[in-house]
Image (cartoon, rainbow, N blue to C red; front, top):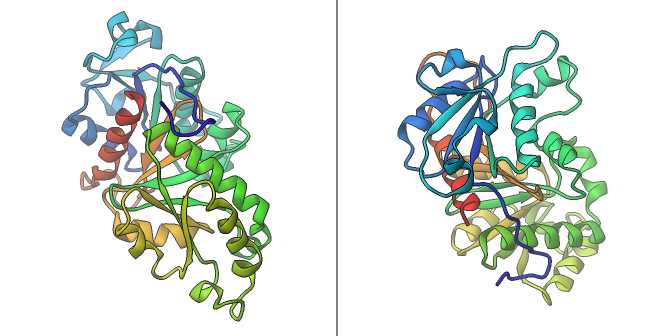
Length: 320
């Protein structure tokens, strides 16, 4: 039995698609290293360029996979779907587009995405700033959330890729209520257990009772008080201690109001174990929490730990 009325079960395939990411970044390397070191059971299909994965068996279509792979949870190996490099757009976009098409047709249950360049996407005419916006729009979902996961630290980003000066105009009680209810509902649907919400303050010292900013007193605290009737929620905590509280609280996550408030702390604590996941999609999506790392690409020194954790989390969720 699920924990909340909105958390309805979604039947899905157990196949995981792994997109290669930017060919000039560390994506191909961390994908290959992860597949070599993995201790996973789900069948996987790498979507990318065959030149980077000469040892994998090629398929021409997702339907070429054996029926035993498509219809069971049995271990079934790793395959490669080759995408020709396009002339008109960034190839990493086509890798993701292919996997999304499969996911929306329910041919696969999860996508694990290696890093791409937002700048390259935009410069090549791709109408998205990155994975999250593309996945949400193509799935037609009304709400979604960029969420970062590790075993001991988790955070949901209330705003993501917007200028810092625009964050304050979004701090409204109704938006806060909707965001937290949605995030808690998605986590309960996926993980089948309750979570404690730890709300960060926006201003230093969480506003110091209005003396250092009124967003807490006027919008954040009233939202928390209303939500206390529905869930385990605490705060607002001063931003400089909220992640310490999170590490001490089992099955908790931090509501971070803007991108760097959440990610500076999260990456400092989980640089090799953090996973980025998108909540709200009709399929599972995870990725490592690092970028293309062009400065070390091709040198054979990229650390695959975050990608390995992304694969493990995707399998954990897709096989529930």
